[in-house]
Length: 466
Image 1 (cartoon, rainbow, N blue to C red):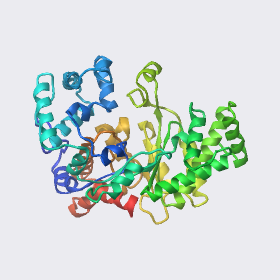
Image 2: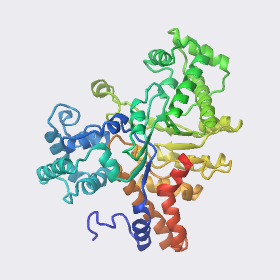
Image 3: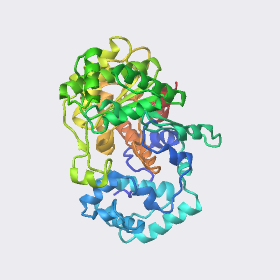
Image 4: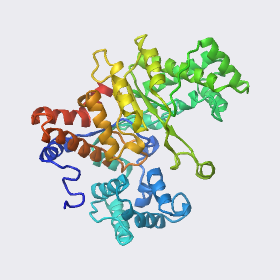
């Protein structure tokens, strides 16, 4: 029986161990997509205790705590920080098979040097040890980034953001990690969402214009994109809960947009025409500026109305959608490619049923002399666990070139989540190691080591900054 989470955790062969310890472990982290607030990096946020790091914004942990029967008071409610930590500790031994168990203990070891497993019995001593470590080692936001050897962070930002904190970070020469904004114009696309009109008005004010037509909206979005690029942006992002494609003309979309601004209702088909045309228009802008476009596909958000009204968005009440994506996604990509204006693009699916869809879709639009121009993104959200990562790696390697994969990201709001890169790297090395051990690939450690180092860091560094 193996020891729990020893130095060879998840590494089940000699080849895997060699690849991880000699290659993967030494690579810096290029975290190109996350939800860390730039203000907390700019101001070097400090913490009073581990609960503030662990439980204040982690909807993964919140979901598990609710499933264990813990009252909302100890999750998002007004319980003390120790009470919340203690309730989480009570649940921990029962998280068998859940990645939170691994993530949490990796975080305890890497940032607090705590080897004990967390439970109700050890809660108080771990609470004291962790909090002492926070104080003695000054475990602030920037310190955690430096400890993790992170060289790049891509935040997620609305076009209306003034990026003041990104500017402050960039001007601070004492902080070496690049922190770049990501342009995410979801609110401008979701035309049937409540608050759309107010958002369009607010967007116009930023550019000193009253947006009355769709053409004016596109101009404002272009101006905001220019502003982002001037402030270091080289990545964009879209959340596509469902993928729609409806042909239309700009005249049709103008009419649809004006109808909405005047308070008239529009049909779903009209909304899809607007979304399709706008997404493609933005894609062309991204191509002109050599930006990377990310498409996150398949989240079914805010399922629980009662809890949404109580605690709001991003609180652990989202799940996997099961919509069809292949045809509409193909048409969107082709509409850009036919004009040779398809930017470098990363496709993520939340439903693993779509792994092979994306694994084959990316091959349709490669080219331009760019290695892996169209990427099948890493296991996302509910798939950033062992099985999800292995299935994504298998689909990509069997249907494309895993050697040109841009690798892992945290997609997190926590400064402790950089250990997910270690988790991914161990799973990657074990997957590649098994191919070698099974005689499916030669034991050429020179090329194998290069492939591992490329996936862990080099590919993403070149893809986003090269």
